[in-house]
Image (cartoon, rainbow, N blue to C red; front, side, top):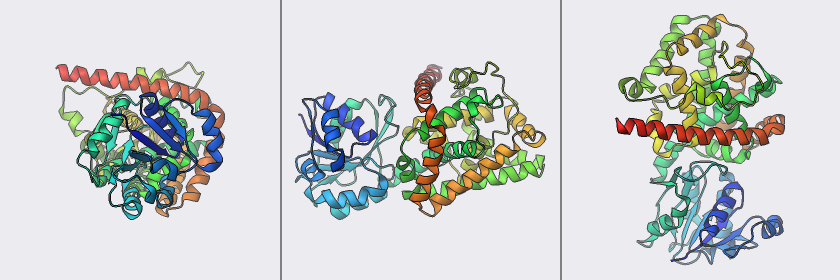
Length: 437
């Protein structure tokens, strides 16, 4: 059966859904703000897609309406268009935090409408094939509602994960909050240092390539994508505070030269976070230095690792340890960025001698001390914006850093896409090797 799918909001993900669904034979009705009507009317053309002037015209004719709007605006948009939902239809949203989205749907949708939110756990430039796609069957008025949504989404070739809203929000915070904050803080620290890391000979090698590429990838997107998750999800608040505390505590131990205390704390994190890896002789590291070494924005030919505390990555494991998060338990709903972060964190902690080298470098080398101080200041600033629910502060910090790196986005996006593709292929290979053993 051919269904009519409505898309309210034609940002990057809304446009991805509109194009993917229409190209696979579904009749797509889509809208954005009225001032964007003429632009999308000319840009999105095809036999299966109609661009309409508002959400009332979209949702009253759609079998399944998807709200693809910013988390900060979801209630206002649903309040405006929700009452017009077609009788007996299905409605969902794409925000990264489901609690406020579902609250808005329950408040403004007619009682005869099913509520099935979704969340593609990746950005718009990543192939949808094989990526986790969360489906949250919250209210099923008709028994076949869930099957209809699954049938519609089948064309994405994603890995469908049926999950509750509460479980989704907990996992989303676990796999995204500290991940985004780490890379956002790196970018802000580099900006405050007036430092383009790819032209700095101290910042080369596989781990640095991954950090630079992912940080720039995040800053090439829209600020509200990350603000929505961080600010609207209470679990994310807890994580951002924990991460800021971890980077602060670790730096204090470094500058106080407390070697044994620092080593004991990091090894406790290693034992907790990576115990499954330690106990499993079949496990291969998710990433390799050779793989990461291919994807550099730098013209430097010396790819030997330099002295580096890798404070940002040490703090990830420390944060997971204190939050009692086992990252491998969340692979079912993991994002590409989270898998890369887990991969480089695992590489740092599980490669023989590398963790001890980082600990020694953090205590004996002062070359990175200023960088680490800037990173701590940045992490605490991001944490405070999230804690206070300050969307405007978040936006200003994001856009200021974004402007600093903007000239590198085209090249960084190209290399980042290649890196994510290669990493996905490599990790799939590793999993197949383990499965065959």
